[in-house]
Length: 530
Picture (cartoon, rainbow, N blue to C red):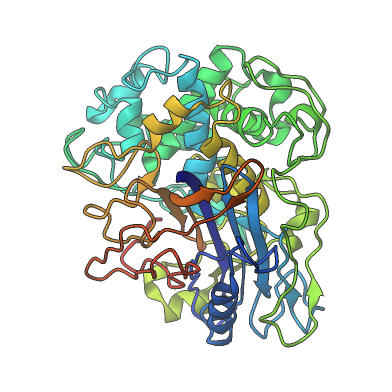
């Protein structure tokens, strides 16, 4: 009997149209790629669950994937449409709706924290370029100015564990008119630009703490925003990214490209693009050779290789379906043209992304907890997170756009340690093991499915050591274990073994794993940040 690591990628969307609740319900949705039969898995209960959830109004559409470290992507399927009844704002002609397909890209919100930022930290850590116990105020990182207002003892590890002492969000938020970003007052809707880059960076340097360092877990976007600048600084300092790798629009926000004026944000984006999202030796999800829009080589790290412009997922040839069983009509399908997973999708591709947030007065008046409107429109194709948007759309805590296929491919590479020169098994274990049970279920960057400390338990009865994360837009990944039994050379039969079935008060649980897994299709209502 052998254990196979499995990634369950549950991504769904509930679009918020004017006058409806901006309730983006997250779930976990796999799908049938291979026909049921001896030795194969039946995913019909998942199909039924997601189809019924759409019919009941939980969410209009979703994409699901299941992958493991042996065969890669096993199942990949799409359900439903971008919206209910009302056409998406950027496709007003689609009166019958826009269908989700398996290559539909999503604003993954806080999955940015793990897919982009934590992965980038792992790459640097493995190469001894990022010591987790180095203080952020060290001259090699953000420097002594960061130590203002009690932050001098904060380390990289504290940022990853969310126990640095930061409040959950900057106060005021960067998008708040009280913060004073130049674009905030522009009518009728502030643009997603970098004109506030230096102001936001200076604000972070002066940011105070609301509790002593290393004493309490408080989930904070500020921790990952800080880590973004750290990663960008390390990358620039060691020549891993240079000016030719940086987005021109991003560099326009800083004074002559100086790191101390916020240009480290631009180096962070370039590092994530080159060494995380586009580092696969068989190709790149963005379709750019070497991961750069201009085709520049940037092979400063071992394992970063030139390759063909199309990424090859480690999946079975029949492992995807673009059927939409939950839709009774024949809606227009969102284009499945080559998608560039990353930050700041180009404007001509915004309509390919499901809408996320009803950021209008009509919505905020009905749901005052959402706060006052900022952009005065339904968000589609641009960062839904207000603080990421105010900082130009690139941030360490939110702003990443990706397809489920690309995320699944990356997680397979992590789980299988198939490229140890990129991120090996030792590094993965260090970052995905619960670090301090007296404070939280958190690992380094990742959360875990620990049965005692994790009260949300979005990964149900997957193992307690499962590492996971959610995103406020309704995205979730779970990386756990199940068993299979070998039946001889070249032939193996998957033997589903129920992992420990555990319930906690207030949690949504899943049936034993020898049945097809089901999903919690409701958002974590107790979490204001995910």
